[in-house]
Amino acid sequence: MDRLTPAQWMVLLALCVLMAWGSAVSAEPLRVLSWGGAYERAQREALFTPFTEQTGTEVEVARYAGGLDELRRAIAAGEAPWDVIDMTRSEAMAACDEGLLQPLPPGLPAPAPDGTSAERDFIPGAIGACALTHTLFATVVAYRPDAFPGRRPSRIADLFDQQRFPGPRALQRTPAVNLEWALLASGVPRQELYRLLSTPRGLSLALTRLDQLDTIHWWEEGEAPVELLAHGQVVMASGYNGRFFDAMVQRGAPIEILWDGQVQEHETWVVPRHARHTQTARDFIRFATSTERLAALARRIPYGPARESAAVRVGRHPVSGVDMRLHIPTHPLNAEHAITKDEAWYARTLTRMNDYFAAWLEARGDDFPAAAGPSAAASQSAAGDTQRQKIP
Image (tube, rainbow, N blue to C red; front, side, top):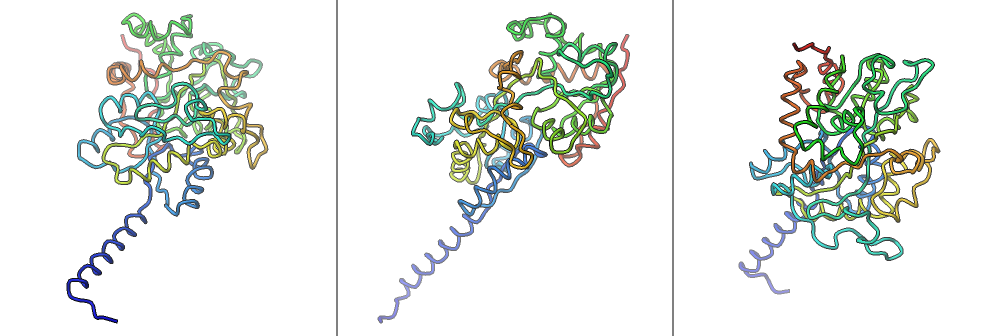
């Protein structure tokens, strides 16, 4: 065999370096930003672990409580610390408009198993320029039945009735949903909510109704209201229907869900600008929004799949045997008095509404420092407990 020339040795060495570099790149994990708790556990079983088994790519999960501030700072610095983010559609729309997200390529979602195109299989509006809806979740009110012997809350107005249903409440520290419920409790029809919230009169009416609650425990992490209810620190709390379900069925927590006034919203996958592994992120989104994976997720946590072919495959929980179809927000029995969140309205007004709400909290005396991180959910909940300050 002829000996290699020095030039050939250089080429061979360069190829070896490139191959080693390529192996190192492919070995890097996919970095996902999601919501933690029972939701993340379901995602691990239905999405993350199967993706690793199929592709060999590990999934590294970080947790957050929503919001765009951290993403804005990362994009301004020129590098996102995540490849994929699980984001509500209203925030995804706002982030897309700000140029914080990468456009998703046409044809990204897979067709249904029977060949039906993704465009026909997904629910209307699911496929966006920068975001792909995977599930529909609901923010609901849950309560402790043992706190109200002889009567049970039956309508969203009962959240604001502390004479008939006394005791502290837990609400998410955000204007979204709280404003809608306050107007509903004031007798405003569902179809008029966002038109009225677009006016100073509507905002004033909603905040005045919220101001009538004496004791509010403000929460940010999704597990916080579950823990507050389970430990008896509050008697009613807003929260995500899947988290309450997990506490009720998996842990036997003494709580029940009030479906009246539930606010339904799209949950989406997005890819931030400056993500290091864009193609792997897109591969994951295609995998995670397939019919099989969406049905597997809904069998573990009761959020409605965004495609029809997955919705008809939702069955029983793999451990408890509970029929998950009865606990999904979009089930006819649960959705009779549901509100569909106007995500386009929130995308347009996100910054203004957040600023307005923060100013109201400060005037109320409820302004407090947020917890230091996602792991501090319990301490944050305690830090957010505030006795109503009567403002003259």
